[in-house]
Every structure is written in C-alpha cells, then in structure tokens.
Amino acid sequence: MAISKIKRGSAELAILSVLAEERLYGYQVAHRIAERTLGELRFTLASLYPMLYTLERRGWIKGAWENSTSGRKRRYYRLTAAGSKQLAPLRREWEGFFRAIARLTGVAHA
Amino acid sequence: MAISKIKRGSAELAILSVLAEERLYGYQVAHRIAERTLGELRFTLASLYPMLYTLERRGWIKGAWENSTSGRKRRYYRLTAAGSKQLAPLRREWEGFFRAIARLTGVAHA
DNA sequence: ACCCTAGATATAGGAATCCTATGTATAGGA
DNA sequence: TCCTATACATAGGATTCCTATATCTAGGGT
Image (cartoon, rainbow over all chains, first blue to last red; front, top):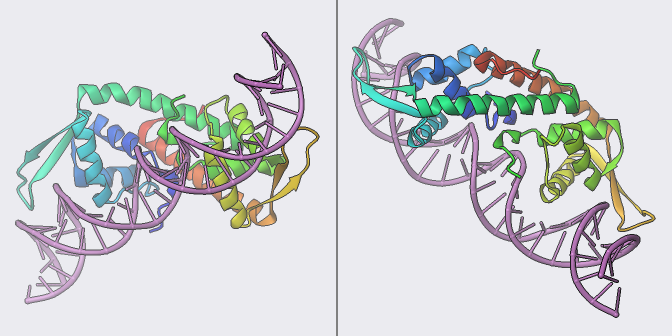
C-alpha cells in the first residue's frame, strides 16, 4: 500500500486523539486510526511502537501491561494529564495549518 | 521563529499552487507563500531553492534567467503542462488527508 | 569612502519523522 | 502441521526540510 508522504507529522496528533477517547493497546491504536480514517491514515506497527515509547518517555501517555485471556500480554496506553494538556494546542496548530493550506490552494477538508 | 513540524510535506503543494497562478522568481515564491498564509507557512530560502531545482528536474516547473534593472539576475519559474497535471491529484490527496484528520480529531480548517 | 541592510541565488550538512525489513511469541483454524 | 491473525520490539534507512554558510548587487546612512 502506497502511503503518501503528506501523512508526515500527523502521527502524534492521531495517537493522542484516539487515546483521548479510550484506553487502547498498541495494536489497537493502529487499527482505530485506520478504521476511523476509512483507511486513509495507516501507521505500520513497526513505526507505531517507537512513537508510543517516545510519547511515554515524554510523559504524555502511560502504558501498563495486562494479561489477556488469549495470546500475548498487552500493553494498554492511556493519555496522562500532561498529554491531555498537549492535545489542545496541537489541535490549534493543525487548524492553523489547514487554514493556511486552504488559503494557498483552495483545498478544503469537506 | 519557531516553525512547527506539521508543515512537512506541504512544500510541493505550496510551490506548485503559487506558480499555477503567476510566474515568480524564487525569492518571490517564498514571500507569496508567507503572505498568502498570513505568515503561517514560511519556507526559508535555503530550503526553497533546492526544492525548486528538484521540481525543475522533474519537469513540473521551468525556470528562465532574466536581467532585472536592479540587483542580481532573477530566475523566473512557471508551471509546465506536466506540473499542472500533477497539481490536481496532489490537491485530491490533501483533501483526503484533511478529511482523515477531521474524522480522527474533529480538527477542521474553518 | 565605509558599513549595513535588503534583495537574490546557492550549497553542505544535519535533524526530524516515518517506513522497510526483520525478529520474537501465542492462539486458533484449515 | 502450517498458516494466519494477534501482539510487541529493534535496526537501519529514506524523505523532507532546516541551520549554517557563502556569494553577489544596489542603495541608504554616516
């Protein structure tokens, strides 16, 4: 699947956004993002996990191991208070960016 | 000036978009983009010129030297037919991307 | 005459972001 | 038994754009 380059920079926003609504483990995060964007945004697991570690190191998300009845252990991530605080300005940044692109090219999201 | 990272990937679209409307030299391209986005998108000249060379090598834009009455020579760029053909699908890609982000986070351009 | 600023183009090197390739491990279906 | 889906993990690299630096010209201030 050819992932276009315009996805760059949106990973953080995407991960924080889905974790803001529910507690999810890594594998689930990737699926939620693909599902909610109708497949338009897809983060491969091999790039997703390092992002989760980075966000956790920053204190924006917090992971906890849990045994599942089937298969491997899962590491569930939730948004921390610090992460929640980051999400609002991040959204504003993206809104500004969208406005800028719209002004330049007429591209709109709807 | 702290340029946020979310600009990534938009350079091509920005350059082609402004050149689709008028013939501009490099220095002017940077100013048009900053001006039209109210300063929200700014490409430093040192990163802009290599992008122009790349786009020209691809045949999407075409540059021509011209003497100006004052100062240095200017290299004016115009969109080629091939570049014009690229712009439409590029816009569609960005529209898809905007829709995806909007679905994920509720971020909208307006 | 001198320096500084603005205009204008150019290149080297590197930071940030995300992907490809690869590996490990478990459960369940064909 | 093998394959697939589930689930986490790391190394290395590609792409995109920036910082730092350089060159050259014209014009204004002192």
